[in-house]
Image 1 (tube, chains in turn green, blue):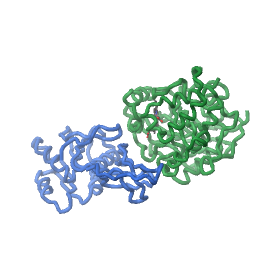
Image 2 (cartoon, rainbow over the protein chains, first blue to last red):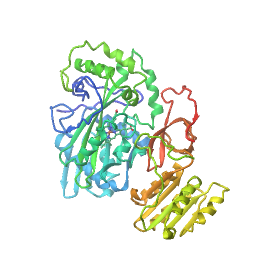
Image 3 (tube, rainbow over the protein chains, first blue to last red):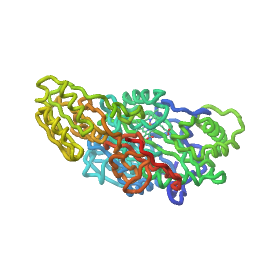
Image 4 (cartoon, chains in turn cyan, orange):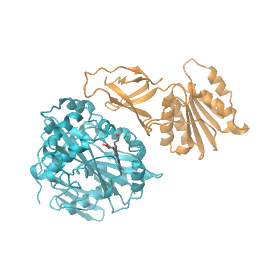
Length: 346
Length: 203
Ligand code: HEM
């Protein structure tokens, strides 16, 4: 299957959209009609051809545009990509994981030839053709994490494991749902999660950390997380909050279907072989409400989830200004019929 | 000022205990004027030979000398007073880089002093179990403006105006030990015409 890469933007004129055939493969995040935080982790196994769970690192029609968007963010604010000094080996581990996976899963787009420590990498969509010495920083234009991070959709955090905790010691974070790498770098699992309401009290983070500390190599895990974003804007960083905050006031009952986007993060967890670190890809998918409601099951379920969402989550996810308006708008698509279990459309 | 003024809050927001001697080969104290009495209290309760292993860095409030005299009189192996917290913490870095294994660090005073001392100890590779803190004095916060990255010292109001980019910042409880700072995020970004009353809350 060849992918037609879309020419589109995530800022200013916001030309981003999903093509018709891309809509059903959206990772809709709700397996049930209600939602609350839980330790929702499962093995990251290949499943359902055509879905975002088919390959290790999903490549879709937005790939090229997302990489252009990342380059714009990094040019504006180099602090979105940072690594503490001890994280270079983990950067190489991460580079290897991505290159090997992409060359295996998308041989018509990516090729990797390895001759001892002499590597040759070809990325056709981005027109990159580079030879370098694996492990030798001077043969790459930048840190290995940045080099490969500019060629893979989604933000990436790399966690060092020590003292029975995970430490957020490196990352390339340009498409975040309102958190700052520059502020959080160096924190441990509980510290960077500190602002999240209710989940600490429910034991969600204690269980999740325990699970991750014993994550074996070769057995990645995944979970879905979600929020809503006005306009298909990837860079909703706290740094740029004055730029995207006012968007929320522009939502009206007439434009709500095109303005509000369901923003889903497909998060995966991979143990890295040399550094024993964990790489945490946060792959963001955006879909306008008008696109979501083309799938009747999703429309019904989203209405129910949002209507019954705990006020603490409405507030934390930053939905307060338009939440009632959205629930009312979604109600027209909910006839009260039962929905089938699981996230996939009927 | 009374002890334990800091309310329970989110997990990244630090809380502090009360200083007491921990077993160690060398003992480093850093205090400002509000923490001086903690150093004196610990020293007075200590066994006889303790002061031979003690190194003190002190940041007086300008013009004050009584506490300098009192601390000097404790008879520590080394005692220096510095004009600012930053100077004292830089000096601490030098001392710790020459320090023996099994050294203990005691920080007493305002959160700014404690935060910077903790960050320096971490940078010098001191184990966190060897760092002891007692909070005294003002609750003024050191705040990083998340927008322009300016560090704002001694913030006492909620919200607070960033002196550099002029945005009105909500001072969050989210705290970075590495930066020794709380996070400041624009409070009226969604509707800049919104007027927010500025109140003195971190006294
Ligand atoms: C190990 C890698 C992980 C990293 C780097 C990470 C990072 C983050 C960050 C930066 C936030 C935003 C916090 C803020 O408001 O500032 C967050 C939110 C959250 N995280 Fe994680 N996280 C990780 C793993 C997990 C796991 C395994 C779980 C499992 C339950 C989890 C559950 C959550 C939840 C429930 C939220 C709130 C999300 C929302 O309501 O939008 N995280 N995470």
